[in-house]
Amino acid sequence: MVLYAELGEMNPISEQLAKSNIFGEYWPSHVVSHQENTAVLWSQQPIAMLNVAALEAWVECFIQDLIEKQAAISDVDPTPENTQPTNIRPHMISV
Image 1 (cartoon, rainbow, N blue to C red):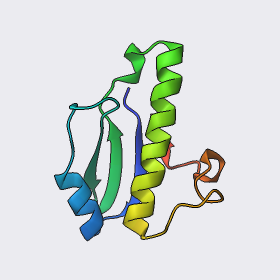
Image 2: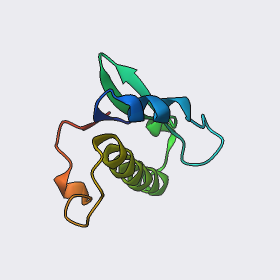
Image 3: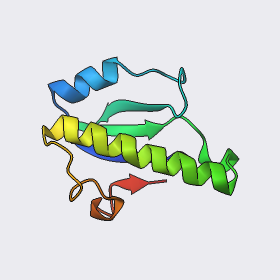
């Protein structure tokens, strides 16, 4: 099982994010790729191998990375109102 989230339509910013992927150099490691003209953020950690505490920490980091990258791609500054996990559309994060 791998955690992933849609970031929005592919654009020059998402292409730059994909070119700057760090591929496991730092924890947590998330990568941006493109699938059918959509930018997607992927977790490099197989979540089935994490205990509950590590999974909670990983998901928190993943959501924060999702918020930052989605804001960059959509050219919207993150605010407290639009950066809460409750404002993430239900279909955006999948396992």
